[in-house]
Image (cartoon, rainbow, N blue to C red; front, side, top):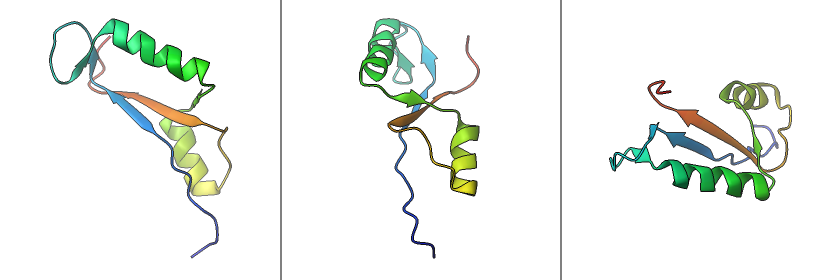
Length: 75
């Protein structure tokens, strides 16, 4: 086991951005506010591929990294 500590990177998962009221939907205004918070708090959005590469190679990620995912490919 290496002495390297694995960073904890939040992965925010969205299903759909709409006003349908489903438990798996996020209202557009809520999504906008969440993205504004991330920007104002200086979070760095990285892809899942970048996260995987970092875990595999040990290459550091930017500080305050976060991953955003969207399920099912809704527009």
